[in-house]
Image 1 (cartoon, rainbow, N blue to C red):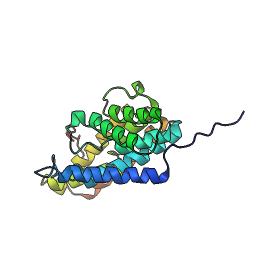
Image 2 (image 1 turned 120 degrees about the vertical axis):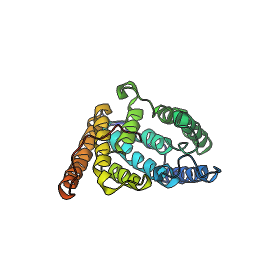
Image 3 (image 1 turned 135 degrees about the vertical axis):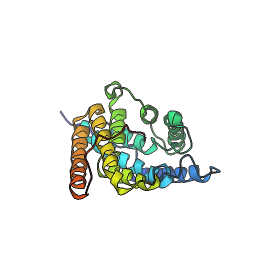
Length: 232
């Protein structure tokens, strides 16, 4: 019995065009707001950061999807559009708004199968679901797991340390901020369902834990402490 070969509906050229569209859309979202955008004083609310986050999530989601047997094209295209409306819509409706943008783009470019478009848009719309990841389909789960993982590890640590400057904190607050990344990592481990995502999460948590231990060992009067509740 032969192995079924499923041809990708999205060429490399089309995917690169999607990336350019998403980047330009985010930039326009910021430029179109009178006062520079919602919470734009934090770098992760800028078009540059949001696009970088989207690319990170897209790579992670594709990796998880390939390992877990999900449709990689559906997953990576949904990941690319998942936060496209993040800078122009309120947090509680940005997923639905993003799904509308994705649908308009996919239905007016090329000739993608309707089933493909539906799966992509469903994943974008559902990616903010806060319940059990076992309740969503495989492609959506891969996207959600990747979204969780991007804020864990070295990248999450760098963002938390960068935040210190914007909040006028001193370096003595670094241990607390890194502790927040560890807490976020533990929360991610508790939510993810795939073996692939869990493995990535543990690897990233290990790196943050090492950094925190080095920090405590090298900075005088740096006391280990429990991190406060996350507010980001």
